[in-house]
Amino acid sequence: EYELGGTLTIPEGAEKPYPSVVLVHGSGPNDRDETIYGNKPFKDIADYLTSKGIAVLRYDKRTYAHQAKMVESFMEITVKDETIDDAILASNLLKSDERMDKDRVFVIGHSMGGMLAPRIDAEGGDFAGLILLAGSPRTLSDIVLDQITAAVETLTGEQKALGQQQLDSLASIFAELDNFSDEQAKAIDMGGASAYYFKEMADHPASTYLSDIEKPVLILQGGKDFQVYADKDYVEYQNLLDGKPNVTFKLYPELNHLFMTSTTGTAEEYMKADNVHIEVLVDIAEWILNAKK
Image 1: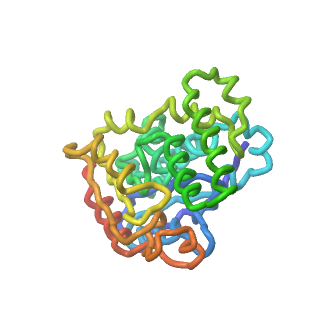
Image 2 (image 1 turned 90 degrees about the vertical axis):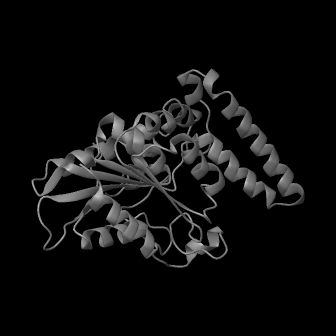
Image 3 (image 1 turned 180 degrees about the horizontal axis):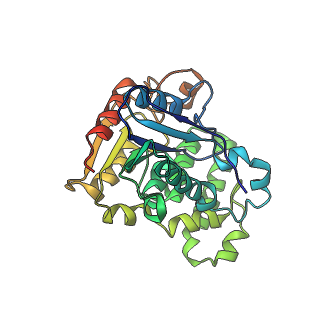
């Protein structure tokens, strides 16, 4: 029903069967390269990992490839429909390919993809290990409130008053999510999604999946990320998982949400074409190749 185009990069000259990776996008209708202006972080990751002997599958997100069809039912859509089911199918596709080592299929989730990767793993992805790029164990509603609060603080006068009013309204809805029935939540338009989208995601917290996970996990964060925060989200990962021998953390102080070099730490940087920093690519490749089966 939702056929997706994708790209599978195969290492040349590497020993079969290959370790492989599924790339899972952040929020919004992303193409297979996770294109943001002139930046293509998923292409950067795929090209480098494949050069090191790791096959990589990246694909167009369902909300990108079937945008018109998805919009028709956007008040009922959840992350399961939008992201999780397709990521599980991608994992199964790699495991069914005789060129791949079915015991060494990994997932790299970026941003919301990082938040969802533990759930994808638990609900059928069954990966050899998880790499979480700029993810979070917090709820999406908490992160959205933080992002909008930061935006409102940059406003002045009437605009700031209006922004604060909208923020207060959003916060009051989020505070009642647990009390809404599914049907009540589906009736509340949050602008591009219903309250049910947030409620369903909050009912499946990443922290629960992560607390129980015993397979290898690599958590990476940019220090100048203004969408997911090093001093909140990354710290929360550490509070939740510090001391677990299967979890590795790394912070890159000068990188942004796309793991590209940052000077201003603002959205304007996204408009300038750049590449995922080589240190990040090297760290990911070495971690995958050294991960225990």
